[in-house]
Length: 569
Image: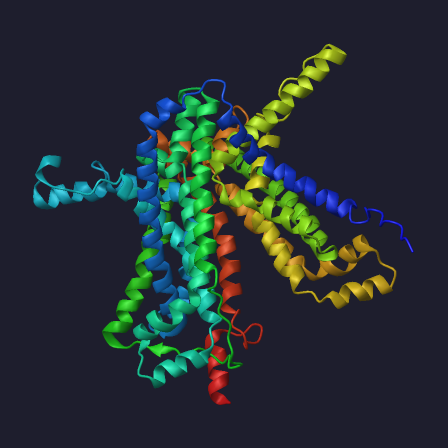
């Protein structure tokens, strides 16, 4: 008996799926545009770039990444182990204090330390007075405006990424492993190298990968220090040589660095998944460091916090007081309003988009949706300068198409509608930071049992009604966290804002960069403090979240309280 062929079902193609795929296409468009233009430039200067500046860009960028990676690895993992597993003076304060440098953008700390450590700064002036030196030839002092200086500045503010993920990994480890190590005579340091670090390796690798991507993205520090990395090269070829094709070619090479990082990160974690086979999730052992060892641990944790946050903040406070001017303060407030407007807009859109994508994947299990989500989240791994090139290419072509249509049909010119406006900046922010909101919303939705969906459907709610009346109230806290994370990163974003902002439009980040580049850090101190102040908000949220993330620990209970409860039992 012949059976009729199965008809192709299009039931999967609904509004949720179409929206998710469309978002992924829009997010991928700037990256695809950069790659396309790199292979089809109108004026091919690639042979000139490859023969002159490209080797220097590659060598300098690799040196910067290796230096920052090693520095953040040592500080981040070491501090996470001390704070999580050891007991020493000030440990409770360092649980959240180690995250404070995350609020300090690398370019701001670079401006501050250059002002302090350069030849005319207070440190070298004091040394000359103390030892009677008359000039620079009488002594040696490390040059702050160098690759080494850039590595130091980035290390001081980026190590919290490694600290954050390393500490989360240490908090999740089973106490049985450490008890077994103790029974075999392993002390704190041997337990650290042979038990804790191997088990925490996936989290550490992710943290270092994030650090290296941030180092690739940096523009303010390398521009101020005149360090020839790819970010600076893209700006130079585009702005000074007026060659968009050449900038796209450099951006494509930069994308190869990003792809290599992603490949190495996934390769390092492949077949490295560790699962706890014990249900013992009591409080972690807590190695007691007494005497000199305890104070050395305190000094080791205090130093990066002092250098990465406390000292720069104090210097900026002094400068802001010394250079206070009512007219300048009003100007800063105007730029702050621009920053807040852009950041709130980008944060709100990013969260709405993330909810649509995450909920689509929840209600319709599909490889297409999974692939679309991964594509949309790629922007966070791409440096801001690269995305800015792609955004201008896409929106510039769109403007030209709209203008040509208007001329042909209505006899008018529309000019620039998208590029050169806040639409371009907002779109760039959305592509760059969508991964932050998407990851937060996905994690929150994943904690809601599917039975809630079934119960809602049985009561007559559709997909949208279930989202509105069931899921959104349950994930409200995570949604606010996602908005906050995107908001803060947009406030600090510099390279993308410099390229995409409208003419005569300043944000706090571009204002600080402009004044600091003109050696007028005092006038930009108030704006810099505003950026730092906003950056402290997610630090507080993250520290509270991590401190209560230990399995077997009741909500609102600190690790020490959990330990005391366990010992009492």
